[in-house]
Amino acid sequence: MISSVAATNHGDGQAPYIEENWTDQESPRATPYYKSKTLTEQAALAFARDVGLDLAVINPSVIPGPLLSKKFGTSVSLIHHLMSGHFEGSPRFGFYVVDVRDAADAHIRPMTNPGAGSQRLITGGGLF
Image (cartoon, rainbow, N blue to C red; front, side, top):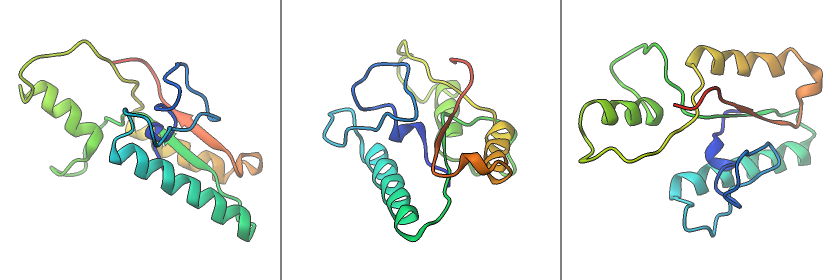
């Protein structure tokens, strides 16, 4: 299953974040997106446990890379807005990235590794 680091990075606010971290849904930093990723992932893991399903969850960071169409999602939107002058200023901030091809590979690896079941796997590379 694909989730997001949004389900891991907004808990105690202390980086580095690891697979055991969960976003605190009561945190002022927890947007509806972060809450939805957290609640959905927790529900999927609980369901998998209840029915005996071997489920691994991929938690990617921002996912840029070659596009297949002119439509794009949250990760590419952020970069597009930064580069097109959508924001009035440029705040000092950063985010970790994982190339779309590496994110795809991260989905294949748990399917070929029996030890990956019931794990959360954060995928992210360098700070951008």
